[in-house]
Image (cartoon, rainbow, N blue to C red; front, side):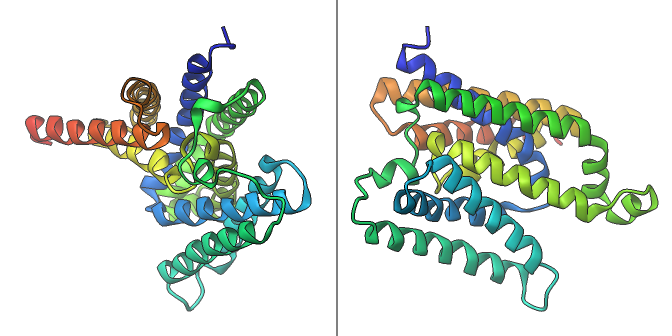
Length: 263
């Protein structure tokens, strides 16, 4: 069954969507959209370094995304505004990555596949990496759910309950870096943030509890992946952007339903 490229693409899209959608709930609650952008843009620099030094792209992207995430965490709460720090790091990392790739003589890559993703060419190894990564993200969030939720909703309440909000933020940061690394091939560096935010924002319009929002977000993310790949196959459109287009349609429909309910 896995020899069929379309089946592999759907499995890869659903796997990446599950991890991103689940983590996206915390991104939406914490209003960390630009944080995801900065981490994702840094992935291009990881691609350049992996090409220059001849190691796995996954290792390069993971290392740079992790370094970027920890840098953002270290620079927040300083005298410089957070949005300024994120803007400088996001665009600086993307520009540095693009320049670095142009300087690698042996680089013979389709840069668009990293910027916009190309889920239709994933192999069995990519599929295994995506689903193992998604499973690890889901396992960590399941075990840390109460602590992460309390730290997100009220850091003061978290301190009172013996929970360290900074530790929970570091865990979230590491998970974001992991999701960026596994999802870059599916959706691309420029659109990963959409995969994190849009399904969670859609679920928020229709959910009354955090748990319901998490499950609904996973459902909308998976449906967006399947619908987007189907649209790409039928209309010969780029797969990554097609997934985002379908997810935005779900978001618009959720807003309409919410208005009908008078919520």
